Image (cartoon, rainbow, N blue to C red; front, side, top):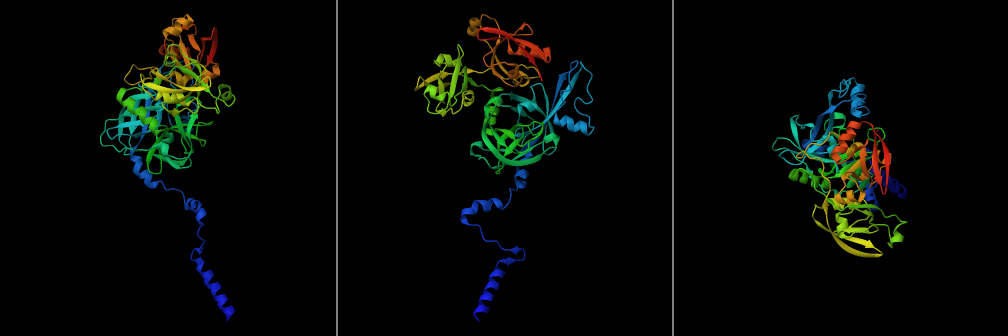
Length: 480
């Protein structure tokens, strides 16, 4: 009798663990609840996309380019050009135009509507320059010619406007609340395929790129390809937290690392471009370097932090405030400067003429000084005089400004441009921050605009005469 009861009990227990779909697994332990939640499935982006997609636009750009003898096709190596050529579709520069006649350069990108009366946010490199012909295509297939409101190359943000009302708009989120590991989605036009959706996670935040000190990028593993530039990066609540801008790639296509401009940075730029047609940034006038673990003890710091001042420009805001080489800037208006590349962004966020309190470390002691900021050199804007088709920084890797009267008198010259930043091809040529460019192919340089014109005319090879310290030397420059 006892054996029969035991067998019956076992049979009931076994039946309770079975169902039509198989065995019923035991519930996860409380300690494993987060893991169990993750295992329930991946996020479904369908509702999010249905809600936000109407505010995402496709952007096509055309601009005239003057062809020259022996010019390579400017689209060679472009993934979209290769895609068209592979399938035999006529595209820009294919077949190539006759040399010495104008031809049209075409580009594609993405953007998103930030106001119902037609303001659209995108990348500066998508628009190109203020002379470009820009067309915006909405999700309902309507097309509009867009007016370029402003371009800010330092942050790679541009604002354009279409003549339309009651448009769908995105909801602006707060990138500070986004966490590494969270799911995000991008909508754009990779290779011209409009309203393509890709998804991934945030890989890192506040990522600093070698040639950029103004943008703390959001790094993701969302698939971004040519044509996605300027499109929005959404969180799971359908709020925009970034503007897709760059990828790291050795092939020209996506390799798992993408970078987005935080939306708060982009919106600050957008507000200034809409109100003033340009972005006004404060300027301190110092050359800085990082504080390494080896340098910190020499300056009496317990840890490497702050921005070490290597040089102070005569007559600059820093010089007027009494800043000296060897000072270490630790705070700007109470905000910590943990790394040296944070200082340009914190100063650049201030308006010219504003007062800033700098907490500095000097001779083993902390002290506070006040500086009244100058204004940085102006960017090209749609409301100002049109600049050349190619931006000198993008093409050559140079940020330049004219010598002031005091600097020119000190060097005994009447013109010249100070190299404020040298990256890419300029760095490979051997140019350094603080070099003074005196001539290009023996033609004296008097302004950044003249330098750009001479560089355009010179083609792919030219020689720069520079002054470095007390020495002058020629630097050969070869464009890739």
